[in-house]
Amino acid sequence: DTAVSQTPKYLVTQMGNDKSIKCEQNLGHDTMYWYKQDSKKFLKIMFSYNNKELIINETVPNRFSPKSPDKAHLNLHINSLELGDSAVYFCASSYKQGPDTQYFGPGTRLTVL
Amino acid sequence: AQKVTQAQTEISVVEKEDVTLDCVYETRDTTYYLFWYKQPPSGELVFLIRRNSFDEQNEISGRYSWNFQKSTSSFNFTITASQVVDSAVYFCALSQNSGYSTLTFGKGTMLLVSP
Image (cartoon, rainbow over all chains, first blue to last red):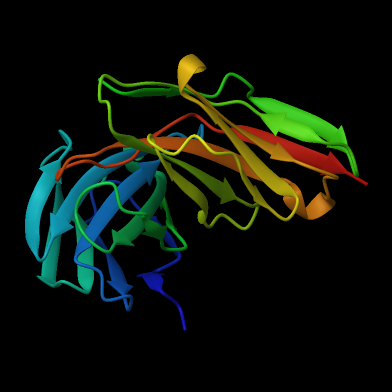
């Protein structure tokens, strides 16, 4: 019973392509997040959604577009991929907005060639 | 602005040694929350503990213990009698107590426990 799941786990693609990463949580949480972990392991928030509504967008290039069809799902679409987009992307969820504990998915390792 | 500093980039110990991972934070908020997460070599992020700024009691969970000191803005993590399975990157994180808050992570400390 995976609480927060992401697909795919690995994604290798060419520069300029468009790709999506999917995230689903079965915890009944209201809030979901996308984080980026760079090659030095630094974790940074990208987006946060509460009940399908975007509440945080941390100056991420507009090639990145999150979409939340319902509060259990938060997908990340990336257009025109660049070498610098190579990273591990983590989805997370929490019961509500605010300083609630965030539970993370397994991560998606994106490699742009 | 919030900041979390984990000054130790890498720590190497031999099994059964005790080890302390340091975490120092900066925030202007009077109410905030502190967290520790573990990232083993398999890559997932595992939640370990959440502590609010009003609760300065130390916490112990098995071989793990946490020391929260507001006076020094520190939230240190100690593993007693370390084991090889403790090898991982450990992240300290901070969250404000507001509706739009999220986690600010430190850069992590890589712990390597050798047999």
